[in-house]
Image 1: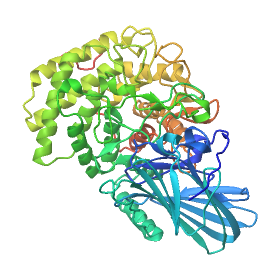
Image 2: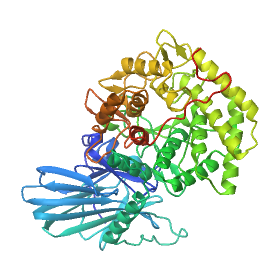
Image 3: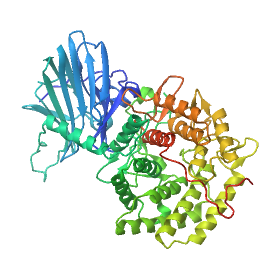
Image 4: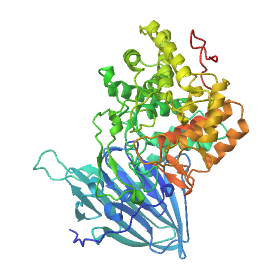
Length: 622
């Protein structure tokens, strides 16, 4: 057994958000820094407790680093083509080494594989492993065995296998080794339960895996998945990377899709806008599926539809905004007080109280996604159609109530314009769906409510003085969510009110060339003002500019947004233009969804469904 020496508290460990790359096995994911350190990993699933949490604290909160002992002259990295395998190249004075990081498709257990290989000269390396369960709070009991070590705390066990000799040093497991050109060392870190068949059963280590066979399996998995991609266009590489990222954020056992693999990466450095995104938002997952469907990925759509039916089964008035990865409803929010937060951004939130909010727009997102689903087997099609009918009947009862809105504000419910528009979308898509499949819904009632919503939004949500739709009824403030009004077909893109809204948002909410959600100083949302530019809103602006005929402006903004991606093509939630860096959770599904959607738009692969002619809702000026 190791003999530990307790270490003094260290400075914050996290690198810039853009310094990280994502690896994952479609059940959980890890963030690997350019310095060779894995600073975030929740095991065994996305929403499990983290065993590496240095991202939100210090190295004392858990990390695993493999890197040259001497500071490298340069560092270059990339994803291997059509994969989620990261290759980081360190150039040193004495030689060059390549670190390959990946998580193979899960078998019985989940693994992280790291292969260090020298390609030139000679390089001395150091591996440092600090496992800290419970988000960096719990130091495990670590024991050595021939060829590795195991770390156990309660039900959790992590086993490291490597030929590199390891020693205990200050609550860490450390090993140094030297590689010459052509030589390599492999490391596999595996999660397993520490609990046997009964309390008297001995602990059984997970079976070892062959790192090179795991590499081949991982490459095959991702290349076969990419081969199904039907998108072809000018932005093929960017779309392909975004779609792979969305796939990596999918929890394969259930079909649920998380908004991001991280929690509490701040929307403003040092601020309080820090949220846990390791859950499945109905809105985000619906957006994700539409993006995947545009590229031909029907299997993921079918899996999501089944997840949806399971997750929101029951009384329609119990619909939640978000759920756990398997449809769990209890996502209570609490603070990990022992973590100092990313660059001192506290609190560090675990769980998300938005699960208790009322967000009217999710009805529209779900209805729109269901209307685009491929034909299903009879059992699931009937269940989904019946579920949709019950949700729409509930919507008819509640759409006139104020809600918390798409941005999950904590400053009180309002009649948000975007929410009302999406209620209209829910009715519009459900009517078309049920007329197509003879779903038996109360279509006459639905049509009446659809037309009432349209009329009300046009009368109460549009400010003639601003010549724009506003944030909520009676407000004089703008909101970038109104960029979606034309995209969802509520009004044609050439309607003067749509063009006026685009121009007003461009003038008032574009800061440093990117779109902010709303002015946090003038639109109280229950939190201190200040945040970065929300990248999805800028991609919505790209689509709007293109569709109203300003194609050169749309392409210019899209190229600027593509340039914000890090060196391996990933985006966070927001961009801090003043600090010139990413902020918010990372990588963010919403950013990659809207990137792909904008690319489809610019290359002719998507056009909005314009409002149909309807009595009382024909989209003409009133």
